Amino acid sequence: MARKSRKNIMPQSAAPEIRISEEVNLLRTAAYARLSSENSGHETEDTLNTQILQIHSYIKEHPGLTLTDTYVDNGFTGTNFDRPEFERMMQDVRTGKIQCIVVKDLSRFGRDYIETGNYLETIFPMLHIRFIAINDDFDNIRQSDVDSLAVPIKNMVNSLYAKDISKKIGLSYQMRREKGIPTSWCVPYGYRMNEQKSQYEAADEAKYVKLIYQWYLMGVSTNEIARRLEFLEVPRPNEHLNRRLHEGHDTTFNKWHSSSVLRILDSQVYIGNLVTGKTRTASYKGIGLHPVDKREWHIVENAHEAIILKSDFEIVQEKRNRNKENRNNAMARSEQVRAECRNHFAGMVFCGCCRRSMTFVRQVHKTEEESYFGVFQCKRKKGTTPCSYHTVPEKMVMMVAMKQIHHLVSTMCEEEKMVKEMLNNGGLDSTRSIKVKENSIAFRIQETEERRLRLYEDYKAEILDEEEYSQLKEHYIAEKQRLEQELQKQRQRSLELEKRMRICDEQMERMRAILNQKEFDEELVHELIKKIYVGIDNSVEIEFKCSDPYQEVLAFVAEVQNE
Picture 1: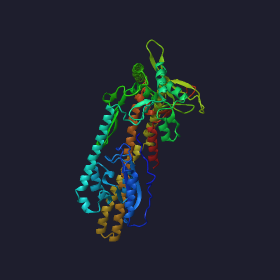
Picture 2: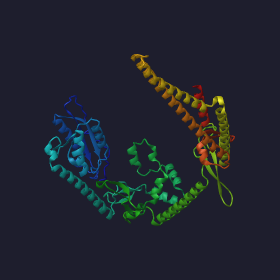
Picture 3: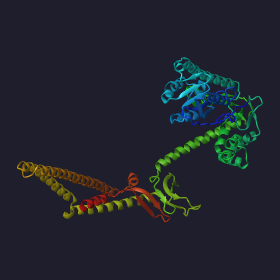
Picture 4: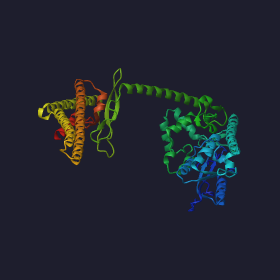
């Protein structure tokens, strides 16, 4: 029989009836069931229905437990704990929703000897979780069960069983491959399985496979072939499966694409060869499904009826190889052109009309030696956007950008002169005024300290009584502390002003270097310019992102002067 898909299928007959008891003394219990994918989909006594019903009956029969939720991992191996429902259960355990876990037996919980032992011996005791395995008669509230050697031995046997099953399945697949019997549940397009399920035979869709090869040999591209197949309403590979999975709502799964055509053109199955072993997995080792090198594929020639002549298939492969070589050469040439003609304004140029990003296009001069140049285009000439098609050369944008940068720098240089004139004016010399304030505060601190020291002499000379002496002493101490804080504040202002002026001087030196620079500087453009807007008449508007340090200095000086 064909393999049955059991992924994410919840048994209807065993749907959990969640009942949360209001009694505080009952343990909130989780029922966990798992069915592995290693039995090739065959139904046995160890089904999900059997597991869940047995666990639910056990919980009902024990008055200390109350069923909170049921967690089912259908089609997941027990050799690792990367399972969605198991992770959800452990999250509920950490949040306190679950206090007890019940499973059919230890093998349903996990087959990894080390990891299973870690949960039973470390994690569950630390989280105060009760764990029960019904068939193994294990309950971790009984110290005799925890100390028993039977549990680690059973876990080791379960781990060895998983390895043994995996090896047996691999061996059965190998024997089927050597006999030329297909091992994949997915039948290639144009074929169907015979009644004995041992060989492919041509189906009604085989005529479309022949048509695809004929079109390709006539020089039709794969995109055009896909368009023609779509126009003729030819059934797509696995269309019946996609319709069932997506319930016919997602129409994209029922369309032909060039990738589907390419897979048919590259497959040896259509000349009668059975190719297996393209992928490999070893779940008990923690190795997931991964592709295998072509040299390790297992190929059985003349394993079934051929749809395409071998000579036609070889011609198609030669043509495909030539196309791949031409495409690789074109890509290499394109990379060279992109390196020579690079977009210096990536993400910076926008249309002045629709305010959307303009496209950078590389164009070639039609000369004996091809040379490329870049232009920016706004291609939004259709639709609801009120814009028209227009183009501006990149060199023009470079010239305007550098010109605007020079204008900005010149303006900043003029502002620097204004700042210096403001600071050199005697009445507005903030540095000098701050220094004067510092000296004045320092003198007042010294005077206050001297007055505080003279208080004791007046007290000894009985000019002041004890109460007056204490009050005046506290007054002078507080005044000294206030003045010291004010002095520290003025010194911080002086350091801040010196720092800002030093930044301005460094910025000015850099500005002078920019004014002397005539060539285009990409780093400078990206540092200073935020966006460039190009209008339909090739007018350029530039939005700068640099801050003006001189305005900050002027604001700081004005703040100091006001105080």
